Image (cartoon, rainbow, N blue to C red; front, side):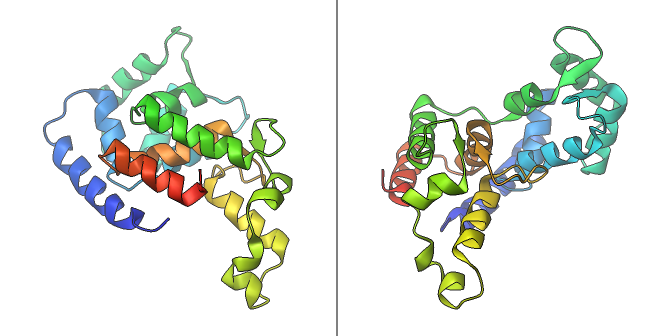
Length: 208
């Protein structure tokens, strides 16, 4: 989306600046992700997803530490263990994957959430809570896409590419859930300080 790369750079610089003064372990991890731009949290999610061999959607301490290390998060082992305990709310020795990512998402005002959900509802033509290629056919005109016009892609490929940008990178199934849509936009949102600007950008992008 136009303009977001500049915001991304600003956000990454801000996050790096704040890191030096921050002591809260959750906030430190969030800032380390945001320092990589708006898809930083999504990227950490992907690293953990790869490690979740048994598809249990949970992580034990060992997987958690290895995931942070693989993603290149600079963190002392004690701090990482403290973090794990914070996320392991029921003391079971496992953390719930989705809950972890939701907690890590930068806080968003209700006004921002509402406009993101408006866009989601507009795209979810069938109203079943998932955006698919079928839904897009009614709202998104693939024929304007340059790669469709030059014959490189079919209409189906244009739709698929469009969905892939919102889809979880570790789980591209051609369907986008409300969570995935929110995860994508919470990264974009963190790079834009002004609520009004974010809302106008969303309304223009999705003609809401």
